[in-house]
Length: 219
Image (cartoon, rainbow, N blue to C red; front, top):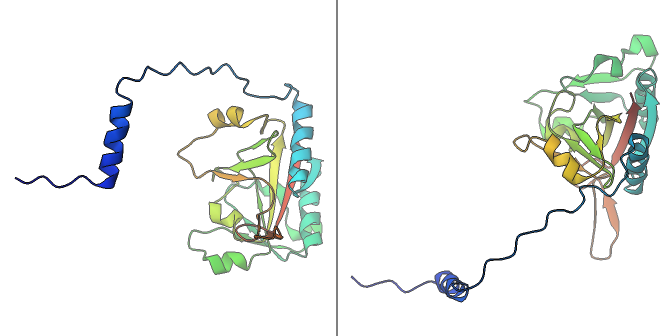
């Protein structure tokens, strides 16, 4: 039987194998590095998260449990939102009914059959999150209760995300990873969606919300 000639890929891999045949074993990797460069101070972590979120052009607010409903409705009113998307599992007390607040915002409950066009017509979306990373100013969503599907935080132009502080705030990415389930649909958000062209002109809202507001809920 005539053997087929080796492909370019096979020839390259063969040369690599020959070159490393007698190579010594690499030294063990030193993994004694720090998992965080931030002091273990809950209040300091929340302050650092606030600072880095703002640096990424997110609009950051602070409130307590009692003040959250009024703040959310005030942010929606300031945006001129007449509709707000509500994911399954969002605490009902976060967005009280209009008859109790005199602020009329129509709540649209997320449904699997909602199209991108329907989601794009929604003025705002309010969600919780899985956790937040102080050193990078990053919010992580995993589709859990109160967060909804990934698309509902990417299509509407205005996203309000509530972070429970300090229990949902970690210092670093290495500290975040053990608390996240890699089989879930993780969305990592650092500020509003933005990109720039070859002339470095920044454009926001290209592949996500143009405006990100983060509420640090002091619990």
